[in-house]
Image 1 (cartoon, rainbow over the protein chains, first blue to last red):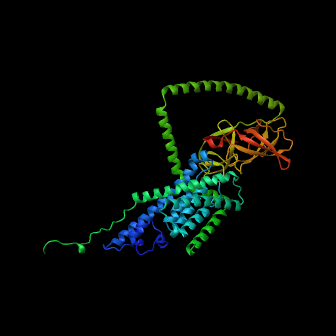
Image 2: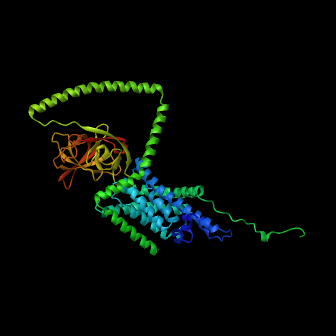
Image 3: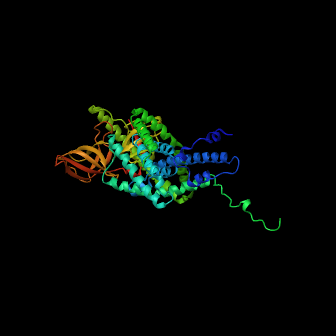
Length: 232
Length: 268
């Protein structure tokens, strides 16, 4: 038996503990009673691999989002402000992963963002995590499948994260470029984040379907309920 | 409602952030360099894609267009050769006169071309990253110019292969400047507006400054960071501020910071 499989057996998954997981479909599948011997091992193994894949995709998305923001300035040239995809990513992560993954994602994406920016290193971490935690704490009450809910959450997260970052910068004694035009930039960032959030949900849903394991469908056939016709 | 794990996580993250923010400057710079190196494969991919697009453009370029461009460049080259010969004559004369008067001889500009690879992802800073670093001899505070020789900004920090350039209009880029009028009024170029990146403010002009729209603004050489007489832009508007104690001017930059692709780094 592989070490990671052995390790995954009998060990509580932090994501599941906090009501998380890759998706509801997978959790439901895991909670079904199993009748096949060794099925638990297979499910744990697939669950572990799914989580790893999901987390890798999230971290990769953070890297690509920061690079896109820095390398492609089309929106900035047209609207005068660059849209940040990181708050939208935090919304998705808060709705679909556990607290540990959320913290790691905030740390990684914040540090990546600051490494390409003139921000002091670490400034973006706390605002992103604060946004993620607020959503994570209330996610039982949020309708994650609804596009409207995703848009509203994306808008609020994309408005709150830069505001907190600027507040932190001012607290640290930095002098960022602020003025009345910042309100327009704030609006563009919020609207951009609102538009990006459902797209991220769709993208990750598709990636999970394509790259992950398909859920095992329970058959409706039961031999004990079979109607036998004819004389025995 | 936040539960206990949330409070613990927020507390830990706040502690970690405070720790990172309070690291010494050199350590932070090294950390930034290390984290930024994660983007190196993406730089390669992006530049590869650009080159591929360029090659594709070359393939579809008509031969007639290429011949026309070639002819135009040949003529421009001939004109530039003549201008260089004239400039060399003037330079020799200038050097002779300087020797007669006893002035120190001016050193030539030592320029190196760099490509703009990234822009600041945050909307509240105006910086770009160029593909020259400390391996190429770039150090902090070197002036950066456009291809036309207009001032763009200065190098703020360097890594091995990349440097961060803080652009004119950023709060951290202040330039001692002089208006090309009879009085030679001096002031300081500071941050500009958020919407129009090509407009900056010129502060600390005297109350009697005779500043008018259309007058050109160049670096004054005061402060030591920027050499004298590099074109910054031209006056767009001027008004008295602080109850008439000073004059403030709006300067339209000669360089367009939003369209920078290649820049010159000016070495001493």
